[in-house]
Length: 220
Image (cartoon, rainbow, N blue to C red; front, top):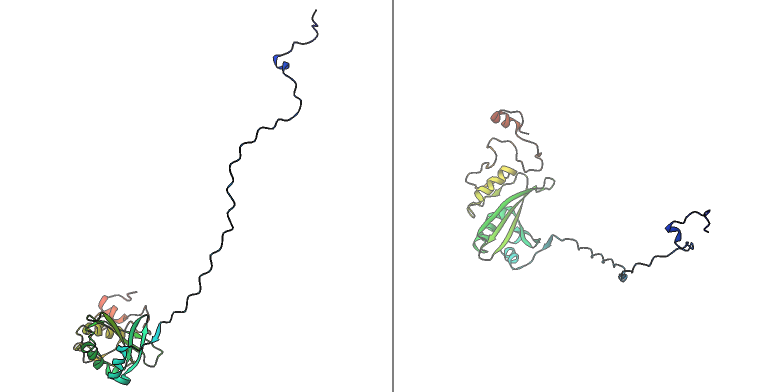
């Protein structure tokens, strides 16, 4: 006869009892490890750049011919950033220009301008850039001038100097002896002052001209 005092067992109770021991799951397969790279080597610092020497004395066939022809009127001969130039006496400018065109074949006055050095005894430098078509080369002529010193006009040598000298006169106030029509080319003829002189403030203007011709108090 069955013992009715015992409760009926559920199906789960038929499972074997846990022993309490933990079951370790199998390890996942390891991916292959890349070999360790050697320590990165720092690139060596570049060597310091040598100082830029912008001007060096120049003694070549061209400068020797000028020196033989004009002697002490060639004040200096230099090379600046691979460009030759001669510093010349303003008193010989016209003769040196004519020789440059006729003998050395610098048939083009490519540019003509000035630089203002207000603290220097000879305040201005005229700078003429010459080009030779036959020789495909350039030469710069630098002409130091005192504040009120005039220079010979180059219009008779290179006609394009007409407009270039007018611009120099307009902007710097330098006058050219023998120029056929030396007057302003950019500013009105009545304008007071020369804007590319270092003592001409960047905001300065001829207030009287602006008031009279534009009808306003200031153009700034």
